[in-house]
Every structure is written in C-alpha cells, then in structure tokens.
Image (cartoon, rainbow, N blue to C red; front, side, top):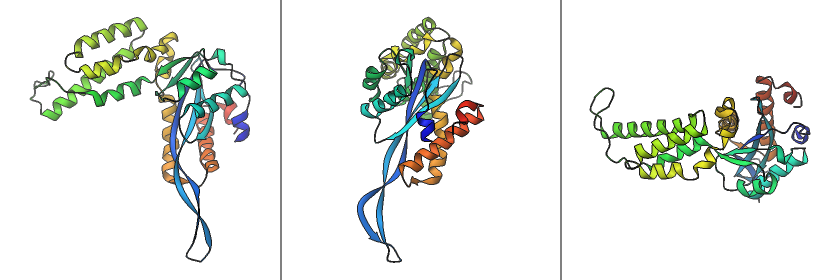
Length: 276
C-alpha cells in the first residue's frame, strides 16, 4: 500500500477531482478497564476522521485515484499536505489546469499555495442540491400543467422543486459556456420573482461552476462535478458501514486501498492495479 501511495507520477493529469469521506476510527482515551475475565484493556473511543482523496482526469477521458490519506479535518493544512505529497511524487503544478471540489473551505488556500495556475470548479451537483434550503414556494400552481389535475399543497411544492432543479441542471448541460449563460439568464427571468433566494444562491459565484467549459464537451459530464469520486466513495462507505468503527487508521486506509485496486482492475486500469 505504501509503495502505491508513493509511486512516481510521470503523467500529470490536467484535472484533479478532490473530496473527503468521513469514517469512525477507534483511538485510545488514555484510560483502561477490566474486562469480564479480569484482564486490563485499553479503553477506545470512536473518533470522526476523514479520508482525503484525489482523482486525476486526463483529456482522453482516463481517470484514476492518485492519492489518499487520513486527516482530522478538511482543513487548509490537511489539503496542503495532500497536494505537497503529490508534488513530491512528481506532479507538475503548472500542468494542472482545474481542480474540482464540493466547496470545502480549506481547499482554496492550499490550491493557491501548491497549484496557483489551477482554476477551481465547484461541483454543479452540490450547487443545485444546495438550492433545496432556499425555496419559498411563492404562488404555487394549483393544477398540473400537463394533466390538469388539481394539486395538493405538497404536490405543488414537489412540482416547483422539480421545475426549478430541471431548469438549473439544464444550465450546466449546455454544450457551450455561451449557451449556459443564456440559460442562466432565462432561469433568472423565469424564477426571479417566484424563488428569489433560489436564484440568488444559484448565481452566487456562478463563474466557479462554469470553469469546466475550457475543456472539450466530451469531458463535461465527467468533470463538472465530483460524481466520479462520489461513486467510488459509495463503494467504500458500503464496506465501512459493515465494519462500523475501524480499529485503527491503518486498517481504514488498507480497506480504502483494496477498493482502489479493485476499482482500477474492474475498469482495466492494469498499470495501477498491478501496483497493489
């Protein structure tokens, strides 16, 4: 595992996707207790820790996990340590053009220090998901515009959420940045009076959610969100839920590593899988 995590990086990807997955790891409390047999045992307590992971994406669509390590928080210091480790392994800072993240507050400072040329891409899925808290449901429809059926209050609320989120997704599905901005303008016109806080939330720092348009359209679905990494995390969470609390950090990272190796083998990324 350690050999894999320190192997040289000889082909720097232009895009990095980063995120963290939280786990429970047992740590000693400093206290002891007697078990039922009268043996002295070290008291352990579950502590939240996060596994920070970096996935590289190349312009031909290839993608793979490059690095991971455990940390106490998604802080600037933790992300700085991750990026520094990548540079020590040969990552060329000037070759990284974009960093995709879910908006973790600790990342920008680390990015500025280690990858100053890289632009940040805010995950569009998280951006739209965050709109849920902003709805005011002003002037809801009373009938379904398609079926003409009378809507209950809750049905009208669900329809409003569906309409707004569908229009929001359409912005980032646009094939070009120009068309995305046109759809954004239409979104403002359609929902500005009915859902002003939703519009305000979506348009805030919107440029950071459009960075992916510098790449070919074939990459857009892969790099406008952290979904590639989230799919991998779902596999890891499934195994972590079976385990409960990991007995130590090494066990946690070992399980993570085995899933990395399996994922790369499943997608025929033989070069990486063989280093497991």
